[in-house]
Length: 159
Image 1 (cartoon, rainbow, N blue to C red):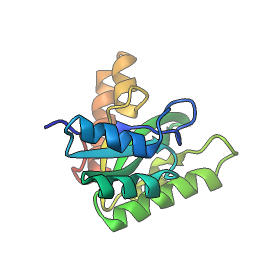
Image 2: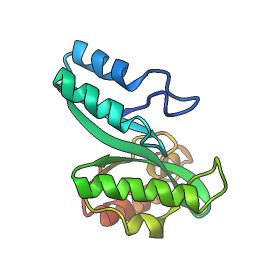
Image 3: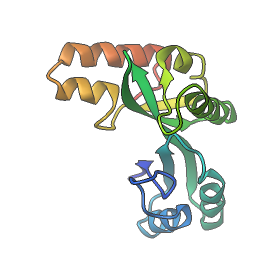
């Protein structure tokens, strides 16, 4: 059974167009047992999403698409909360990304990420992600190094 693990809502400005409740309703109509909400550097729709998922009877997975700075280059990394601690760590990462950088340009360093990986499962799949961008640049060795670094940071909780 298919589950979408990288879904943006209206809380991802210029990238998502649907309200969290509409996303949950559509996932349910398609027979999905679960759906993950992964807005860009934001958890603004988390409460509405979780309530709608609970009401309609599908598993609502909370997460985000975090902007990660690697060698001062912004990349993306999808984070999914596995536990309450993971949700708290995602919230901390988003907060650090916003507080430590100019408005409109949130991002976290690998060092900051490393301090907040417990309870989180990560996905490399976004085309602007560290691993896929290395592949697209014709750098398979760099992609392997990036994947290895993320595997270490997340203790294997990476796809």
